[in-house]
Amino acid sequence: MKVELLVSRYKREIGLARYAGSLQKYLSKAGVDYSLVEPAFPWPVRAAATLVRPLGYDIKEFANTFPLSAPFSRGTLKHFTTQMMAMLFSFQPDLQPVIVTVHDIVP
Image (tube, helix red, strand yellow):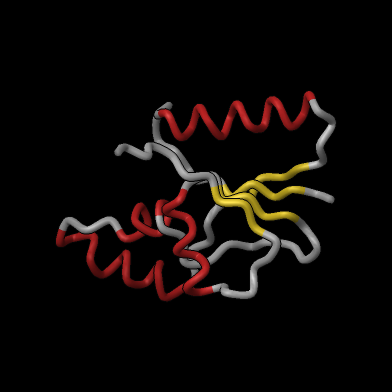
């Protein structure tokens, strides 16, 4: 089964970016067929981003972290590489099967 990794567009090399990069490296080594999927920005998000940017809000960055849409294919295993991406279930509840990686659980 092909795996689609939902990855954010990271502006700098933070821990989550390193995790996504390592995951790609080891999936390749294991011979797993995978592809990358980035959050999509539907026209309402782009329009809202244009309107509120002068006020200091970055809606595109918010939607990059908490995706509202993503162009997944049918019949693939979806892997959300951070728990924040699970917000996508609110807008695309029929996504399955899905793996969600949860980071930084602190007791």
